[in-house]
Amino acid sequence: MTPTSTAAVLRPAREDHLARLRFPALGAVVTLTTPAAVAPTVEAAIRGVFQDADQRFSPWRRGGEAQRVACGALSARDASPEFRAVYDLATAWRFRTRNAWTPRRRDGRLDLAGLARFLAFEEASGLLTRRRQR
Image 1 (cartoon, rainbow, N blue to C red):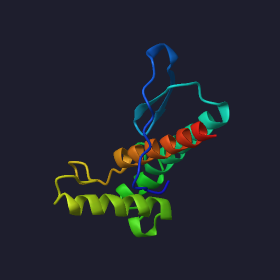
Image 2: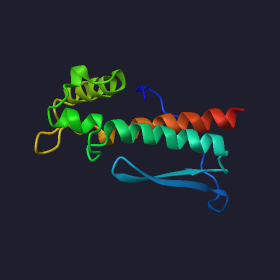
Image 3: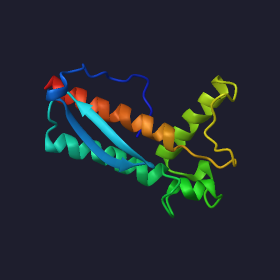
Image 4: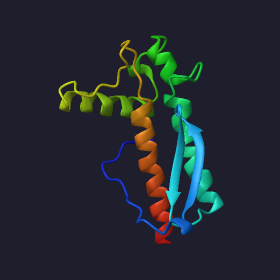
């Protein structure tokens, strides 16, 4: 998952024509609402995006990369390129907001789950947009 600067927007549709995907990821229930049914291959790709993000960034996943970084067993600099990209984006946001936003919990531990969830939604939106353009 690589941070991007644009997010696609789906047009709203009538409630009776909406399709919803729901599944757990990153400590929350992900719900994606689309104006039409999603092909099984696209749904699998979307679930894969969130599963990858969950495996890498969930602070609740025992032995996961985020948990190892948070407890000091792995430095952010030695983490995967994907982890470092999100960490660098979080650091930039913290700097730009003058610490109004921080990727750290109140106890000081690093928690990139919220940002990773946002980026996963952005990537899923791109998958849906590409599907609609075919």
